[in-house]
Length: 121
Image (cartoon, rainbow, N blue to C red; front, top):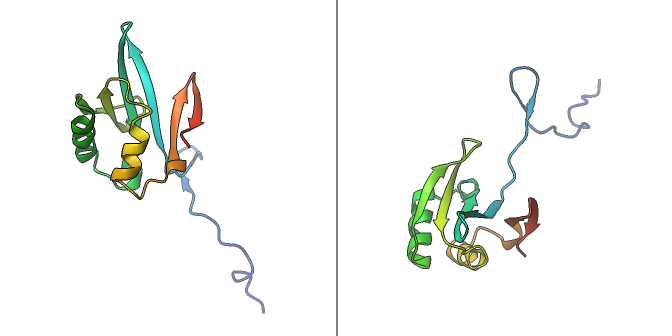
């Protein structure tokens, strides 16, 4: 008798939610978005640093010191924590992230421009 367990490819562990919905595994990526408030003020949001094992409190402190702005941790609309940094630092932040935390590849950093996700590299 032949065991088919050896021949069959391994299936990924799929987490099922109540109602039969399947929960997707989150991709390891950092998403940077510039939000304009009032007419001239900007806020840069950084999402996904926690997926790389980075403490958000430590990251917000470093971002605030590097760019001489206020930085805080805020719960987003999807109940995920993200970092708000005052000012338009979206394009300077990519170099800072890859230098400070070398385990974040530049290919995993994305910008949100005009509602579309655009790779930073």
